[in-house]
Length: 431
Image 1: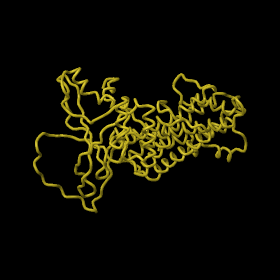
Image 2: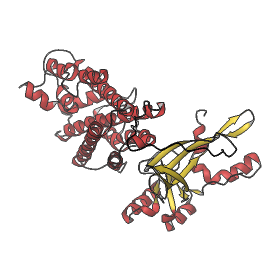
Image 3: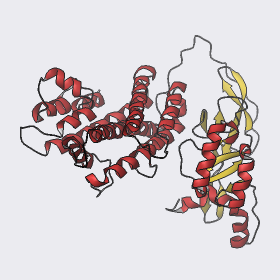
Image 4: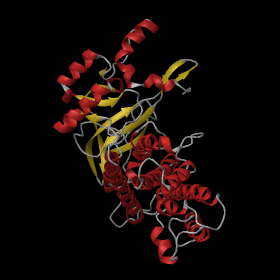
């Protein structure tokens, strides 16, 4: 599609499509669409508030938002109140749709045919002869019977649908089913689309951890300040942040803007390298590869999404640090599941490759910033650098002294036994 044409698929336009069709094309729409209401209209908000349980709440722009889409009938009273308050504050950002039951289709589970909900998505192309509907599309298949709605972030599978002919296929003899003793070899390859998504699942998971550790170190340094004067640890963190790659190109963090920058990276979904945006990217890349990730992993991802949900910035530094601590623990749990529960197939290899590349890049950016000061004497950037790279205890155990440039560089760059070092990432990638 041409750049900018994605606006045409915005859910906020759907309520107005019949009139747009009449005004621009002078004709009625040939196919009905799901009933949709944009909440930027006051009369619509009043109607929705009165019958909130009937609808599916979605982002108006079509861009993903944490926890959306959501089936309003499944919300608790407290969650319902929170969503209605958010709608009242930002009505233009939301639409609601009527709840449409999915179709039913036979699905093979083991050796049995079972009925499962299915939603089929068709695609059209604009050609020299007009719009043409492609033969096939994508189907979303639920894992459970009577699943009320099927979204990419819900339990289920995404399948390609191919229509290979317009006529009924003649009956053919069904091949003998495999016995329990037939060996079943794993598929030799992974589709390129899945490989890319698993790669970016790994990179985004590591980016979230990198940003979380960076922000936690800054908040701890900020909590130790006395008065309005910027302390040496906080100044060191600011210098590392400017070299970390978390800030947009051309943006330089200054002490006066540190509170706004931290708040944006923790809470603002529009900040590209912020935690909400990175979590959204993680889930978007993981959704199409759902059948390669365990249910426990998805429960963990759902908890990550809830923790990283954009909310009104917390007042206390201690509250923010607790949130970041929780994020780091959940990301560590994902690393453990990846290491202990995933089969070592091609999907795992691409995920691991993404993680190792991203970890090496993050460590390299911080190390380059720290050592660029030069000299062999004390360097105030080394303490926060070791904390961000989770190597404080290792350094203290080996060197009974304050951090010095040479030993820190050796630990984070060349030590093949340190899981946080650049040499370790290269060794894993080589294997």
